[in-house]
Image (cartoon, rainbow, N blue to C red; front, side):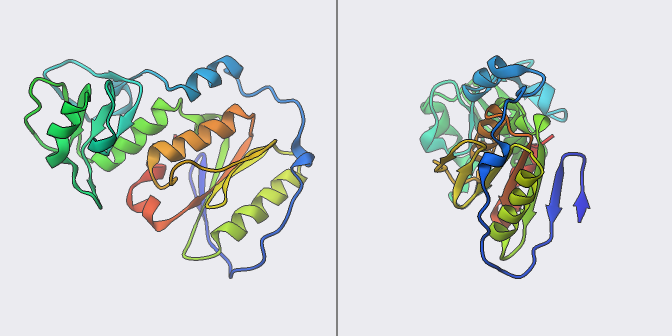
Length: 236
């Protein structure tokens, strides 16, 4: 088992039946962390982030810094005010989509190389995958800071292992949440995930939802696609 301060990657045993556990075991009052409910409500709406604070190796062109509340790596879904992160994805090289992102209202561009931006602020980073993940989690309020996050990775058996771990933690009286292909399971309810959590913003939003629900522990199924996209890199 590889251990970091707040995130563990756990090896996967052979596939087995998914256990059923009762969330009632952890339905109790919670302090909701040191920053309280008001902070978490704001976080679910998006936090204002200075890129220089979360991207220490960034260089800024046409500006001293960039402040943003949301980030995207799909130019076609950009909305006014978004920070567009140019990444190499299955859709192609995001650097080639920068003009489209700007046309749709992107307020700043994060990229790995110099590109024309028609005066829109440019932030150059050594690794845009890492930058995208870090920005997504920071803009969600860094929810992993307030929970113990257990990441379950492997070719098969991730769901089984995640639910087994959740059952153990619930039995121990912890408020536990699970992010998996089955959805977002919080201490008090279950919600479908609107987006694939292999995308860092979706993963960060799911963790923020669990933190806002007062979870002390979050268990996340981590696919090879998520690892390739460095989706977990933003957890601090």
